[in-house]
Image (cartoon, rainbow, N blue to C red; front, side, top):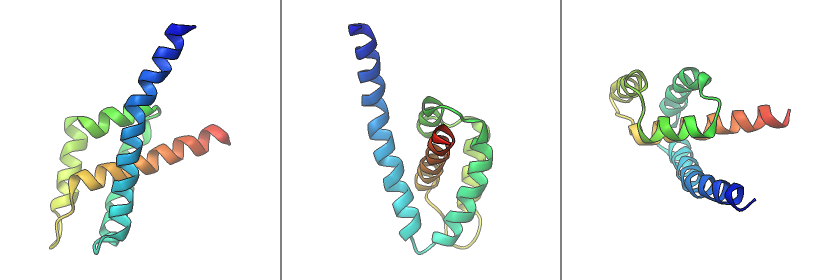
Length: 107
């Protein structure tokens, strides 16, 4: 029983900071002067993240995105006159994907 508690506590201690950061990035995207561009870019990233079905996969994508996700993010961030912050873009996408996963879990 103690081992199970330790595992849950470890997972919780890893995920809580990530969730807080993701939701801060989502708030930053929503309040940005470029909120419309962030919304469009996040929608594209969410399509790519559709195969991310666990929180751990989201944490991994946020902390060390694979080459395809990284290329897509940099392409979306550099397009247009104003540049988007890649960190904000991926964090906002992770927050929304997490919300989608939770909605699916309770449905």
